[in-house]
Image (cartoon, rainbow, N blue to C red; front, side, top):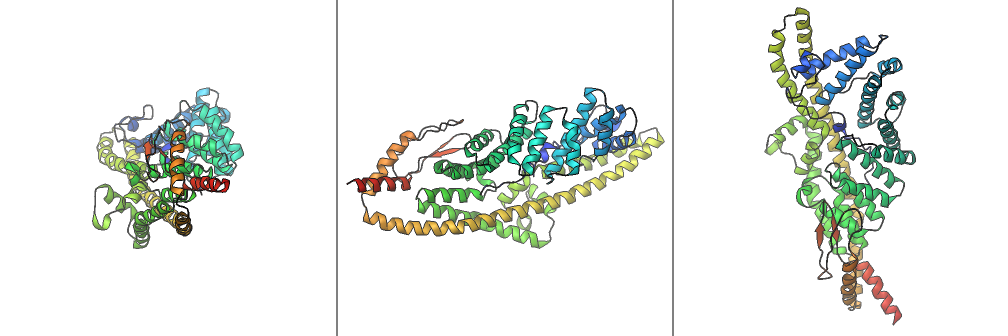
Length: 486
């Protein structure tokens, strides 16, 4: 039931931070970089990398490679170029630890980039892996992430644990992705308790909190921790998180309530799914057939457009939280600013040859913008297709849950009419459970006292809930035991 996917499917934030034109300079990468013209500097550094790749002394190559790496980190408009062959040659010739570290860092980010776009294994990744061996952290992270992408969870788990233990200097985003990958790997091998612990460690740090909440809910369901799963699903449907796209939350809640013999609540969850996601599904179908540019729609939505350009909030939550969309759009905006400002700076250059080269490079910036817009268009279409598939999957799942809840409700009414003493047993069980329902995990969930067996009370604690909802199945079992003993 869990939404297993490549942990880096949308992990573009691992590759590039959001660029800020002119405010972010990259020292040591030429005059254009010093002026904040990152695209112009990138073209120049790329030429230097390719021209110096086969030199006996790799110093110039390594310096230029480091520039390309830093420029791409600052500017999400361009991907990391493929220098695989050149890096292998230079790595064999490099003597200093600094040179090897520069090559390793570029190779590491290249691997992350390819994993983010769906690569799993093959000659390209295999050729880059030896280049990161000089860093225990990078080596472990690559081993774990590649193994996870290929479904080899037995190999992924220890490597990811080692990487996390060595990740003190890594970004919060990368740490989160490693933890999410580990949690998914643990869930895949049936280690639900360990997986839940890793998911819980992600609740406090923001992204990828939503994925952690959804997948932790499935893990709790499979572990028969129905109260916890119901609580997590409610957290995904309340407050700020209620704006986000999470159709799985309704399924988790409905199934949890059925397992607790709370059939009325289960049917309410099914109805809530229909209310929330039927319009979203209709919009996604319409958008896929309209032929209208999703990129233009997204820009219009970001500017507060309404009417024909409007986008459902849950769809917009997926678009606007996409690292690739945010980074590329920021790069596109920065490119417009660069084109406006760089022309005057180029005109002031005294070297005619340099001026001609820079002028030619400036014309390429428009090409980068166009290509980036095309990438965003394809990416948004992919997101839409994924959302439509998720809604369809949960709709089909809930169709069966609805049948089970309706049948269970009918049987429950008959049983209650025949056994009026069940109500007293429910009150007794609710009182007993209220004393025991304090969470002993890593987060302090708090203590709840149930005042009424029909009440549902929740304690909010850093993105989580613990329910004191009466487990009617348990009460019914206890009641039957009591009846049998008489």
